[in-house]
Length: 83
Image (tube, rainbow, N blue to C red; front, side, top):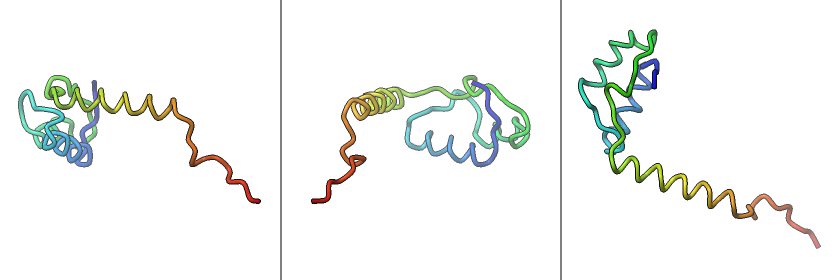
């Protein structure tokens, strides 16, 4: 996965790292932002990050919840009947 690492993207990567959803393979987020020339060049994030077991479980749970919500009719979008 190639991405342009601006400061904003770097902040999000730090947040995911702090939540233990991703882990750094090598380097620091600040270094990667510099390597990307502050969002001007794309870099391969798979060289520097990996999804943790917790991150994988999070993604699996998210997909299950997403598919369940798509299967259930959304009653909040029904038009209320006025009598």
